[in-house]
Length: 57
Image 1: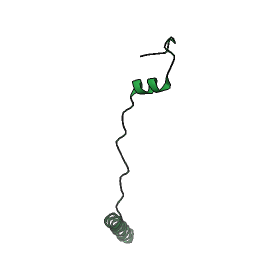
Image 2 (image 1 turned 90 degrees about the vertical axis):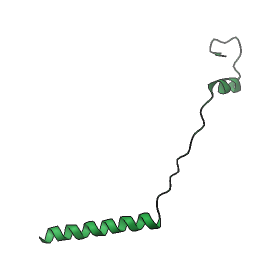
Image 3 (image 1 turned 180 degrees about the horizontal axis):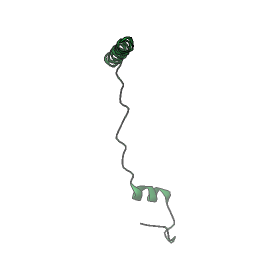
């Protein structure tokens, strides 16, 4: 019986601490949309010579 009441008290304390943290200082998302990579633009910026076999454009 004592172990159960201690477990319940610890659970209530942890739950209260969690919600107090979430309400006062919630986590902020730092996700952002990344632009797509334009392969043709990268190839043209690299300026490969026109007669090489790896020149795709």
